[in-house]
Image (cartoon, rainbow, N blue to C red; front, side, top):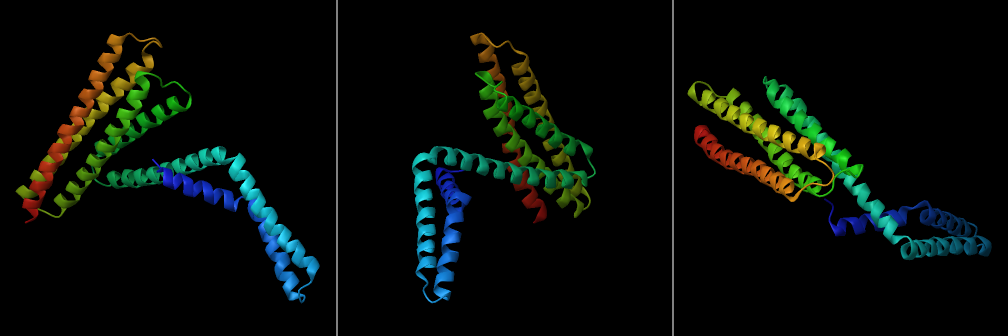
Length: 241
């Protein structure tokens, strides 16, 4: 998520480079340059100063009257840019997993992306309320953890290819254990999301409690996997030594 400082910086830049601001300034600067080139022609100099003042006045007016709208637009622009970068990185990971010789890893990544896309569409359409909003927040955490685990599994595969004998076998077994944990997490998350979509609009408190418990269980799986990754990292270091 973009920080407030980044949003303010983008909003200020958008105000400055807006055609309403930049147009008069460019015309004013051109007129000033023409005036000086013609020996200080007062007509051109006056027009140039007027253009600069008009641009500055427009900037001040928009700052006072449209700052909130410009800020919201800047926030959306930064969010879209982050999303585009994220999708590019995931596309690269997808292609890398395609080359690892195990189709299950790529299928897991695509399943995660499908779940996230569905939740984003639900949020955009205003269908996420109550427990739905909680699911979206937790799903982002689960998604990030699973993607990190898939990246690590790829690193284990690449390391195993450079080894031989028991060391290679051990790393590949560790990788399969990671993929198994990710698969369990993906299935659990998919079931939870489906239940949220199928639940009635007015849920009983018991239903909300059950959903929270299931989400906590999902996060516990992610935490166990993270602990396992730390163990595998230490083990991989010993193997390389």
